[in-house]
Amino acid sequence: MPLTEHDGLVFDGDLPPMRSLRTAWLLALFLGFAGADRFYLHKPVTGTLSC
Image (cartoon, rainbow, N blue to C red; front, top):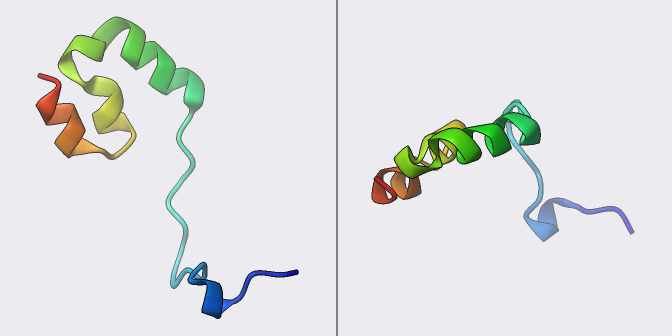
């Protein structure tokens, strides 16, 4: 069954670009203490809290 606007899954405009899982993992590995991976994934609140 296809998803419809009723399901709340219709996007207006362009979707955000996909983030590279490998890049996020490497940022977490080397700069995770600074929250760099969270900022990369557009989650600045949790990135700031991890500092």
